[in-house]
Length: 255
Ligand SMILES: NC(=O)c1ccc[n+]([C@@H]2O[C@H](COP(=O)([O-])OP(=O)(O)OC[C@H]3O[C@@H](n4cnc5c(N)ncnc54)[C@H](OP(=O)(O)O)[C@@H]3O)[C@@H](O)[C@H]2O)c1
View: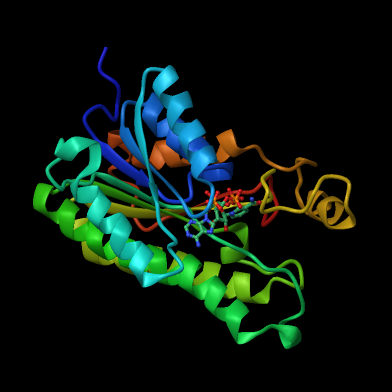
């Protein structure tokens, strides 16, 4: 039986672990051929590729530091040759997921921390969306999905001000770009996760973790598969009338 994303090429940034790995596995299960990306975690990226292949899916991994324009160029070049050139430079689904956060008071932040946040969380998704949009415009079909954050629409905690600024930027970018690409058959949407159990989040049992649990109404951190399910909806051909939407999946955090 044909799957909803059969014969589609998907690129999921930051998919060696965490939310990205779950998104990649889900899109592959839905039939897409998936490019996995990593910065330093090559072995973990290869493990994700192997798991997808073992489940009958198609995946391959590319290493690229997306905080650096050279890494962005490397990844864009890899799309052309993906899966031995089978897709002829086509790209159907882009999930901008790689992101970073550094905790601490804004008054003590460094210029380096500013660059770390904005280069990876904002510049890279914009550069990759520009390249992807040009590819998708040629076929008249595409899905660009930006993984923002519940911090992309509200600021319920101190100590993450730079991160919040980048996620507001990314959620705003989603809306602006949707206006430009919607007429081309390309939807641009975002997912705004609340606290999800990954290495980016505080460790269970810490005061920070407990404070975040209290801000949800369901009383727990979310699971990566709960974010992957939202991405799968937005990537699905049936989601063709959903455009410019930032879908908040946060256990009630921002209600
Ligand atoms: N976890 C949450 O509670 C939560 C909540 C809201 C939003 N989000 C957002 O969801 C996305 C994924 O978060 P996560 O929790 O899954 O993060 P994670 O577990 O820390 O994984 C981060 C991923 O990004 C990659 N990465 C890190 N720095 C990179 C760089 N400079 N260039 C390219 N790739 C890089 C990592 O690759 P390596 O393995 O090679 O380091 C890894 O694959 C982020 O955009 C985050 O802001 C997360």
